[in-house]
Amino acid sequence: MEQGEHGEPWFDDGNLILQAEHNVCFKVHRGMLARQSEVFKDMLAIPQPSMNAAPEPREETVRMYDLPVDLSNLLKAIYDGT
Image 1: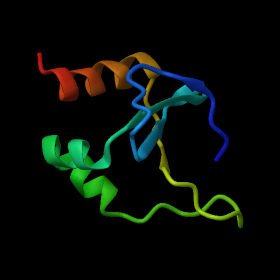
Image 2: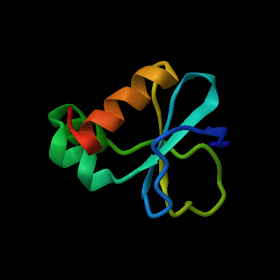
Image 3: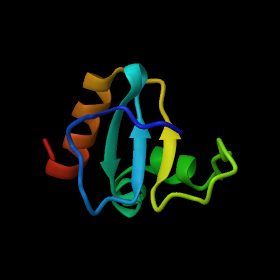
């Protein structure tokens, strides 16, 4: 899956890329999301289909159907609290 603009948060050591609407991507930590959210825990338990025959990237990319500002605010709340 082609990556677009980097949203905030973007962690260089992250292992999961969430791609929001308008091709805005957020690089986060799979374990952190699963630990903090039952919804993410369940969602991440489902294998994502491969978009091409190229070798698997180090990070898994998950397509989200949220607006970038909404996903950014959710991720910041998960990482930083309220």
